[in-house]
Image (cartoon, rainbow, N blue to C red):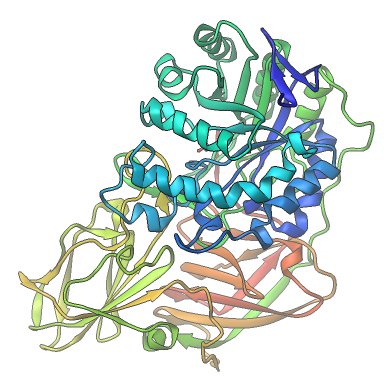
Length: 587
Ligand code: GLA
């Protein structure tokens, strides 16, 4: 008998009436040194439960390798901390998680197979899922409620009704969980629409909804779909995420609080999405692609009650008041904002240009025609494609099939243009000074599509490249995952501006580590690391203009900042500032 069961209109936990008041907190978007702090703040807001997805792509980076379960991916540790805080956990292991996460959590090695029918009962897909669950579930079973752990419910797939209608696939997933020892309550979640609910749910499995407004209508849809059972909003959207080049989305606090009150007054259970959004560190952000490709920014602040940096915002206090009307809230003071580092300038005074260094970073793969990044086995980062132009002159460089997702083109090392998937670019006018001139194409994977039919769309050069109709052949392809920068031969460089892709290094001193935000005025676009921790992508296109630096990344004394700047700078200083700048707000 699972710990959490359902009645005709609600839940029982260990036989006692129970209402789930949960908030989403993705452990993989928060530095592990801050998990305990965020969980405590969840309890203090009045939550009795937290919800997390599980990102398959990070936990199983290699199809034949084991499970990665350390550092930011130490899910058992996160579950132990949740339990210590007295919180229950809703677990959402996918296999697909959406979540504005690279590829919706589906591993690149899986989506690289163009024939596989993702999220269906195609045995190539379910076989891979089964092998993953064989690895994932044994270390998690001790943390399920049946074994005395905090996990009281487990989700099957994610918003499946928005994607497909292969009920046999959902049944396969249910059996895959059950046969591996998951006895807890299972649930599906779908947008509150009759078609989605019908295609995405399973008989005997709790059906929940995802919505942020029109509460009576959404609850009525759920009730129409399931005449009996608990009503639950499994994703109550209280904010939203941002794309590069778009606004910073915010949601009015009073409106979100009023809708939460409406949900709780109706007797429904809730999972606030997000309680604490955190950050898409490293190369982990996803992207949308409807009419055009739109990558998600590094911050996943989500305008959530607890900000990206873990401080309570207006929604934290408003939601706490609303929850207190319906359930006991701890009789302890609300948390205060965390200390911030004092403003600290960082001089970046050592440099190494990228293009001459690619051989030090990776062995080249020769190819007659340019392979995609997926064919190169590269899951994230950049690839440099290098060849020689067979003829000179003015003309059009044509990339048939386009590029994924952004390409910088260099002739004899000089930048000659940029192509972007967002703009459907396929051609660039260039002047090639002579036959045999060096042609470099640096391609950036800006994040895998996480929603809809384009999940798994390839990256890199997506077809043959020609100059004035003559195909360019004999490429050297350098995969640049940038997961180890130790070999970079930085040298002191006193120039105050710079152009072209280059790594820049600087140091700064810290007395007591505290949260801070990296601001890069005058810099254009690239990646940032502090003490080897990959903070993620920056881009002066905005909306986001600072990157969150979690306190545990810093150490007392000397600290290192490394930037990969893809274009140019007007100065060579960075700034650590005490406040974030996520851009102009739009509600
Ligand atoms: C859906 C998905 C989530 C997330 C939200 C938007 O509800 O289930 O993973 O993508 O949309 O933030």
